[in-house]
Image (tube, rainbow, N blue to C red; front, side, top):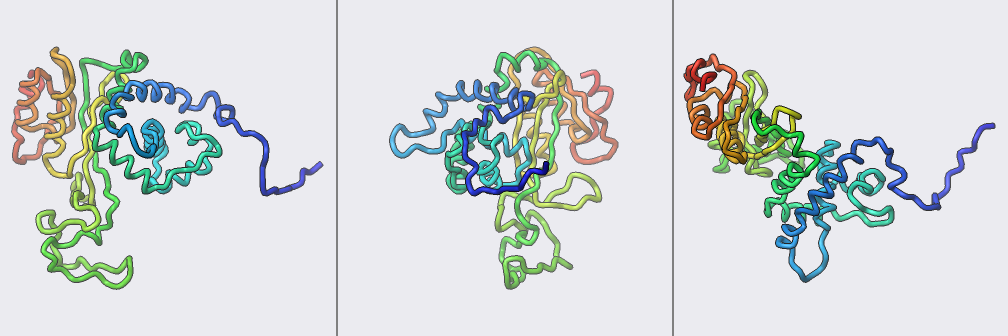
Length: 301
């Protein structure tokens, strides 16, 4: 017998998010690790927040929500709030009950900025890595360093001259911009909506985009990230960030680090030797400033 499509305005009943999340869902393995790290960060939260006034968004819930944004590649915090309004899996992971109201996106952004200014994001990563279940998975001897472009949430139309001598924008919010015959440079131009973004490309022949740079150090045993850094996009940013992140790795014993041909520079290899690190980098056949390190010296060092 065919069932009837009866639609009611109220579903009724009691919904338990814990019972609706599959037992084999990956987030079930992640959530206990996250909660343990957040408990270790509780003294840091006490220092950032005042003991008086109206309660803010709990930092634990805010950080869990930001993790979901990264895991599921949600493009904006506004879309993240929309997902939290109806996604039971998201509510379960963050710790929101079914009837709890979702935060205003502006309030969420302000509270997120407070955590970033307090360097809580880096402390959160360190707390995860210090977990007794995670620490045995990490290698203390062998690492990889690399960087990538993070495309800015800014249109190329916002890339305008710093002196204001270019043509005024046309009518409308999305007016046409003619770049023909105009030389675009980070020295003379800047984005009006994201001043920290820079016009950059990593590959020859690729299109230049407004972007930032993200840098990571990964250990070789389980390929887990152990250090991160975000910088402005530039030709030397990967090498400079790589030296800073490798120098922050604890321990006094000799370690090894691998890198692509961008790290085949005199400065990087010499700094690694000073840090008691053996650098294994791909040979750069192109001649550019900073190159010219003898390949045999790099391998033997």
